[in-house]
Length: 314
Image 1 (cartoon, rainbow, N blue to C red):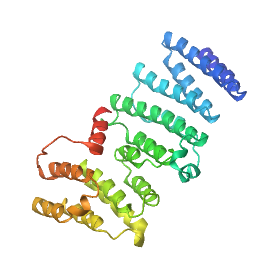
Image 2 (cartoon, one colour):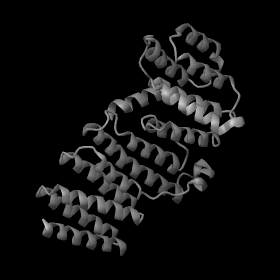
Image 3 (cartoon, rainbow, N blue to C red):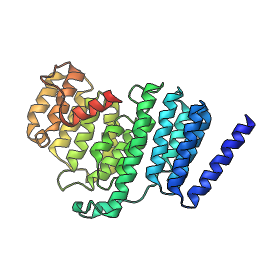
Image 4 (cartoon, one colour):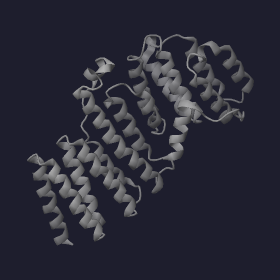
């Protein structure tokens, strides 16, 4: 056992030196060759140590594509080796996540959107795609290996925050799918407040309402209230005093009790505000079914449909 451990250690040192010397491609091929040899001998522990180390080393040197490839391979190996989701595997995944390069994308986002082919934008997209492929694989594996049925919330939160902070253009829609399953309404609220400062004038209340309705459509009234209260506390006097946000305030109160007539009255009275975003009607139909057992007339469409499908597919 000691000889095997020493052998693995020497291999890791040799490969790390190769990466440090800039031989990224050669090192990557060697990582995969040694990995295949370990797997052929069912040396799963050695294979996983190799992949974790290799992913971290490549990412530390800015090699996102190589690092992400080894990271995804590690998750696949968890599955092949029958490794359960637990604190140890979460720490392994987290150690790799922390090595993904993170930069201030403010300069990219402040430029015109037709500058999407700039070098900075391509690099940002590569980082997001690499980290997303890794964490989506980890979320799926965690759901199948002893974790929560919709995937580990810690992993959802990691992915949400990486998408929101590292995408070349603000993509709260994509990030929100994971914030909603991340057990992190405070972090989601921070992203919403950040988005409010970046959206078109007059649309800040839409951003807030959308996030609250998404939580409610999933039956999560607790986090909907936490999110809304955190946004109000953060924004203070800067929160728009709009009919739409008045509706959200009254809605949250209405959902606390069996008040279907009041719910219907609110929808009718605030219809002009709700019509500003066609997805709001879909969210409210789902809310009516979850809280008041009102059967939907049609299937779930649009953003809500995408969110619900994502949770089913994980």
